[in-house]
Length: 129
Length: 241
Image (cartoon, rainbow over all chains, first blue to last red; front, side):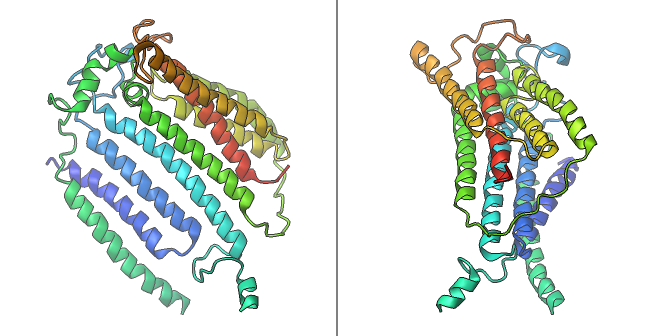
């Protein structure tokens, strides 16, 4: 414990709280998807923060970094960074899919609000009943 | 009335979100920030740091993890991306038409058109640079591909009526995906391990020609992600043309 936990993990968890709050309280689909993206960002930040080691440089050797071929004890953990790279790409793909689903919801209901969720066009279902 | 229901919904949501985030914070605050979790002998990261450059020939250890040690993961990731792009295309085509004529929006100004045309080649070149140097510097196929897709997006904004060839995009995307799997099959044929970097000692460490098959895989990923993201943008543009 050196005090930085409170700044970094606290900030990340505040970000996550904002995302969860947005998903739970906003009825606008676009805003709910934004909340999802904020949570994703918080998780990515968390992974990178856990992999950080004090006073060490990025895991890139040679060139101007001045690190040898086997920089044990000189660089931070490369594994969380690789996993976050994957997570960012997957997050982008799922966000695109969610946004298209929102477009579909808008086209079939005429609104982005989730207040009265009924499948299909509301006017048609009323006619059938 | 409206105001009250918003507050009624917001307060429990606030309580739940603070509860979840606070619990997670209490769990994660036990992990020391900046503590050394890497150097112990059983840490997998220690193995990657100690042998990453010699085993894969890549200066960027993140690249050595993404493309070599966890290359199979990356193949799956590319597949997820492909599935998402296909899903977006399928869902957009299946959506019911609302029958309304969408407004075209304002025409791009002269500055937008001319400045865009000036910037697009530079952006595309930078994207190519990023994915060519993925084994040397920060960046790689995914990042470079996305940068190239931003050039495509800028083109669509600068020239909204531009005709784009969907066929060419999917052709380059499929060819890049095939070459990724083909490079994996080379490893399978030579040493019996799928995606094995069979010529990892090829070239001088830290120079452009190094890392054996890694730059080739990242070039394939760069082209695939670039054309995939461009295709995504093009599909989301809808039936403008």
